Image: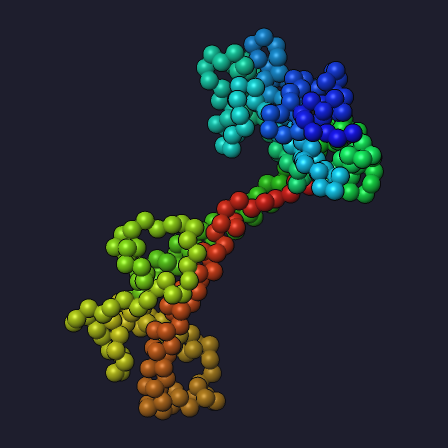
Length: 330
């Protein structure tokens, strides 16, 4: 048997007459269907009802048979929290999605709306969150990646159970901790690049090579920077300073002087000056002067180099941390 149309898949699944599934509907673009299932009796979500007693929130389940490759089709599955008053799935905070339009016929009653607002929401599951399932067109069987045979109803039951298990306290603790770690990583990458850019332009005479961007053009937040995108700014007449003969702009001079002063204080505090190379330099005026000039030169070169590399690396991580793909394990 070959499953080509949505009606073929519904007929093969055999769930249209099942009392557990509601509103079984064929998909127009795929060989599959979606259906709804009520949340377990006694749960807080099951108590959220409309004014005429219908469940205001249900579990949306979809079952799609992908086009075959070598006679085998991959099964796409989804299990989402579905609010009856929404016509499509939206990516927004729960507190916004839970607000039904006033007077909407599918809105929950005010007491039920209050229950929904304070109730934990299950995590939406997609195909990557389920174990792989396939359909063998020649054998007319559904099976997993280990060859175990399942019926479509059993596959949907497993997806529904995994979705409901995300309401457990242990899972929520693990999920929230993982979400916090990912939030910190994302903020560190985005804010880290902004901070490195700010420090680079604020404390050093560095500018963007692109003239339009230098003149205030819009900056693409996902632009992947290269070291060639930056260059030393042209010195303005009369705005140069010197450090023991080493020429520097006023902006870089102050920054480098602070770096050299901090370095000297750290060395004086932590390094032994009674022996070794540091003691030799410390007790020799000419060598001390040369060492200070060398430190100033290193600070003038190494500071911008490190900041530019930091911007380049972080700019390549921004799009990766924007939507961190995370598999749900329950």
